[in-house]
Image (cartoon, rainbow, N blue to C red; front, side, top):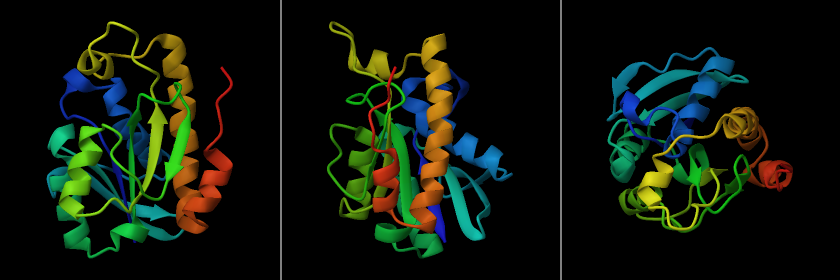
Length: 191
């Protein structure tokens, strides 16, 4: 079984912001595989279903970004998965161009508070992740204002296509390996 967690902030105020791309990818996966993500459990909205015959739990933590680890820890403990092999976390990354994907099997939080909290709760940084590029913060912008801001119309189109790619990447990570997904998806996006 795999647990696929998309990071974001609950409430409509944050819907479709840069910081909520993890939620958007979970929504895309849920739609593609007809999984309803409405059950409130483990400090998250979760949905159970199958991707290519493999059981999955889709999760959108409701703890707000900076406490995402609380929900992830509960999910990992309750479903007794091996988080090094069966957990995939999807989140925004300002060091990547809009729409660019970067798949990793481990690594530091890179300044991302949600990932920092997950690492703190798991006690290690070895779990699969898909970073979704949301573009670099413009000079003079406050970081919080930038990541809580919305995409332009052109960026929304790119991000929608990227959510589809991330959904496909999850399938490759589950059926083949994170390495196979890295070879396919860790490429620069041509604008």
